[in-house]
Image 1 (cartoon, rainbow, N blue to C red):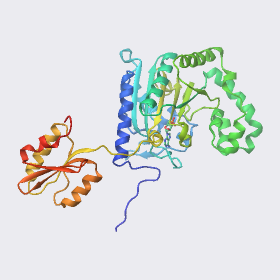
Image 2 (image 1 turned 60 degrees about the vertical axis):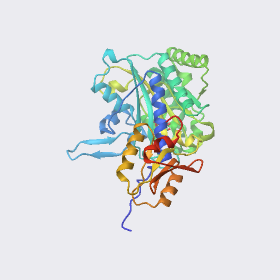
Image 3 (image 1 turned 180 degrees about the vertical axis):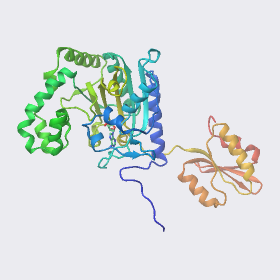
Image 4 (image 1 turned 180 degrees about the horizontal axis):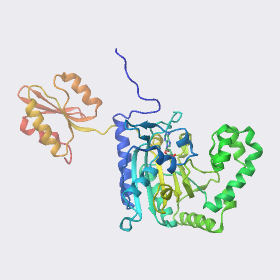
Length: 413
Ligand code: AMP
């Protein structure tokens, strides 16, 4: 055989039942978003390189190590989106969606993102995400609570009944300045023994040390000061207000003092969700509140809160079977091509899914295909009659062409 091709490392093919599951998952999430008054947005898969540097942050792994960069023939530098929020904010500013009739903006999105990561189960280079962003001049605690309610109810809708919701706050700038200097003071005596990334983070963004995945560094970080001890009274009140509302609504959560998240733009509440029996996959989704992003991208002062799910991880954490949707009818074509094509179109108009195998396939192999493809009725010509075979009951009836539809007996259809 000539040279064959394999998919790029860290990417996946979704085929048949798996692709169907992915589409249904997105559909269920879209429907949930609509129920909460959230509208769809679709933005480009690539944006100007600088958008992500300014938006996601110069000190994040996502921007410093993980982007896929492109150069156009015209010499423009582009980057395949490593996340959605910066592109959405760009679209909001460019299309002036922040003007009053549109506000508050509530948007949902889905699609591929691209990160040059070390691939493993549940970690890809082209992961798929679904998420939401709420944007307004000021977002109060009701918006935060609504976002968390939507997140939990999305998980329930797809069958994840008891997600583990971990919450922390990064506080306002004032709280964070105090916290950062406490972190620096704590880490300085250990820093020589820590990884190169942590050494750099001590200078650029000490909070990110709390997110280090190196075991030795994790141990050191486990005793680091916690942000709650450095919150201003106002930040403390806001955080407690949100937690009280969640309790009133019966939303269970855990406080994780070291949850910081990978992107630079977060301020205030941050959160992640996990599934008990699939902790090995890492977070199924995460998000938080941010307020400097719009300004950093040349827009007005806007606050945002959002989250994104990793769709690949959601699919891996659902334990249901990989079963493809059945197809109602397979029409086996012999010398009656035009008649069968006509019938197929009539059936499809009645919402009866109909598949025609390629002409010339033997009857035996078409029947075998029907079995594998989960076909409900198999129709073929025998002498002057047509045979309608019920594949589920393994029974068959003979009839004239005009009566095929009546003999399909497909319940309500
Ligand atoms: P983030 O944009 O980093 O906040 O990620 C949000 C969610 O997307 C995570 O909780 C994961 O479920 C998923 N995710 C992020 N990166 C990857 C990846 N490389 N492979 C698979 N899923 C990912």
